[in-house]
Image (cartoon, rainbow, N blue to C red; front, side, top):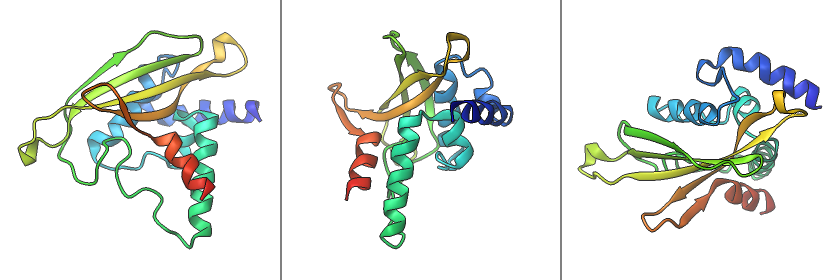
Length: 170
């Protein structure tokens, strides 16, 4: 299973210029944010799930999708899970700050303005939790394990993984 995934990820990354050197924590985050900046919102297509997201995240996403299908196609997410809303403007002033590595985990904070065209100059903060996966150190790559929105007071308001788990359970 891991060999197949590694081969698929390696092949998929050839098509992901932004994630070509996936051993850097910022690479998968920048690849996801590139989709947000372009306004496409297609974060979870099969190639992206295999190349950018952890096994645990992918399992939770697939379980939530299957539950959605069982419910006759009820909408999985009715908002943009990266930007954190339904309506937004072109993203501006996107910045990245990598946190301290803790074992095989690291968090990258992304800050951006998403509502400037509506006169709202507030800055949105999103934490991408990353995990290294693979058999040995040279083949361990960083994958997005969760996407969490952070309020001004520093508290997480929403964990995408938690939402996916709740969707799959209901």
